[in-house]
Structure formats: C-alpha cells, structure tokens
Amino acid sequence: MVTFLAGGTGTPKLLAGADDVFAPRETTVVANTGDDIELGGHLVCPDLDTQLFLDGDVLDRETWWGIADDTAETHDELVRLADAAGLADGPRYLPEEAQTSGRDIARWRRFSGIAEFMHIGDRDRAVHVTRTSLLDEGRSLTEATRTLADAFGLERTLLPMSDDPVASIVHTPSGAMHFQEWWVGRNGEPTVEDVEFRGAEAADATDAVLTALSDPVVVGPSNPITSLGPMLAIEDIERALGETTVVAVSPFVEDTVFSGPAADLMDGVGYDPSTAGVAKAYPFADAFVLDAADETPLDRPVVRTDTRLDDGEDSRRVARAVETALAEVA
Image 1 (cartoon, rainbow, N blue to C red):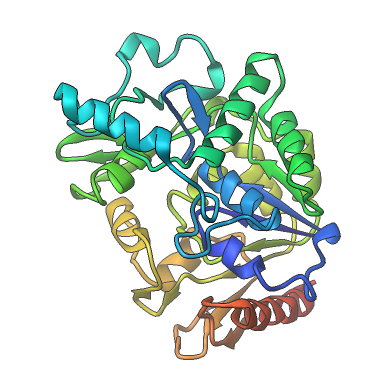
Image 2 (cartoon, rainbow, N blue to C red):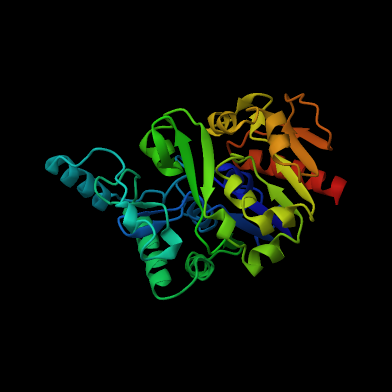
C-alpha cells in the first residue's frame, strides 16, 4: 500500500498513467482541502474533485479542472445576470458574520454566487450540490467523499485531509484573501506577503488519514505552500509524516517551476523558490525524485528522471522513479 498527498494537478498527473506501477486498489490519495470554498451555497472541493474526476474517467484533461465536455449554462446565466445588474465586480465574500455561521465545514471561505468567479460546469455543479446536501444531512466530508467515489466507480481510496475546515488565506498589500480569490479571481495578484492556514490549529486528521499515513507516502510535484501547506499545518499529519517513509517529487527544475504559483508563494513565505527550497519545506522527506537536468545537491537520496508530466508515458516514467526511490529508503 502507498499513500499519495495531492494538491493542485501534480499528483493527479503523476497517477494519470501509472496504474501499472501503483495499482489503484493498493493506493490511497489524501487531498488538500485548504482550497475549498463555499460558492453560492455549495461546497466546492477542487483538489478532491480533480482526483475524483480523474479516477472516474471524466476529467477534462485539457484544463485539469471539471468534467470533460460539460455544459455551463447555469454558470453562463449567472455571469449574464450579474453583468446586466451591474454586479460583476469580482469575487464577493458573504458578510463577515456569515463566515462562521451555518455549516462549519465552509468557515472563512464563503462567497456569493453572483457572477461566480470560478467556472463551474453543469455536471460538476451536481457534484457540489450532492456533497453539500450530504453534509447538510449530517454526513462528514469523508463520508460524503466516499459516497461520491462510489458513484464514480473509484477503485482508489480518496480521502479529504480532515473533516475540519482549514482555509488557505493569502496576505497581500491589498489585504487578506482566500487562495481561490488570489489565484482564480485575481490571477495571482497582488504580491504575496504571507500565507495563513486558518483553522489548522483546531483541525484533526481523521483516523482514516492517519491509517493511510502509516504506509509509505509520496508527495507529488505539487505546490509546497497552498497544496501541501494546509496538511502540514495540521499537527497530527505533520507528526505522522515524520514517522513514515516519504518520497517527494520536486515541482521545480532547480529554480524553474513547471507550472502554477508555487514560486510566488514560496518567495512570499520566505522559502527559496527552487528545489532547494522544496527540500527545506519538506524536512520529513527521506528521498526526492528530481528532473534529470536538476543538479541541486541534497542531503538525502535522489532519483533523477525526466519529470515532465504531459501524458501517460510521462506518468509511468516518473512513477517508476518514485518506486525506485521508495525501494531505496524503505
């Protein structure tokens, strides 16, 4: 058994063509929920859903977001209504007093559905409606995720990092904003001054997550700050990672990031935006998989390969390098 930590698209891309290396029935994915928001009353869990849709064979692999060939009539009409009413002025938080009332799972990340700053397809929306309704019926996020996984026919076990709310809040010269507002609503602007994982001090990993973390763990080539940071901010997850075998895949080639906002976020919180910075952010990692062109010297075992993840063959190649690294430090 092997457990993968997933945030963003790094781990899903790693697993997309790797079933012959890491069989789905023998792997667990623990997904970041610090990116989750409540949008128009529905809980949206981007990192859970990317893996859910990938393993359910419906993921849009052009965008690595949402369901392939999904329509978006509801989303388009929300945008049209907001434009017509003069309300399309960017992400709109619900009032401060509403942020911590009602559903505990959506705390500190509640947005109005007016103009809907995230693109939500119609079939995609049905997932969010179902998830939120299950929560309203009294299910935990873990239970709701299991129900959705069964509906999509997943063989792999998919778990949220916690049933408690943790919100990734980016601090900027323009004020604090949820990661989704900063990245999706404002295209990664303004400058990052710090990142806070609000609620992490009161959050616990579930028994299912702690059991999964007793197996060898793979950290995919994800953003160390907002993809892995919320997990590491939960004390019992950080402790568990220090007690098990961990292999991490760098999302950088030396100081060049493959994609996404990792460099800006790492720089903003004081880590060098590079493979060396990733190694510093992951003191629990026993070994790393680096790109063949990455000559960063590390104080831990390294397996090098071409770490691009553009297609299934890339996934298999990197997965085999991960398998080799796990064998070296097991």
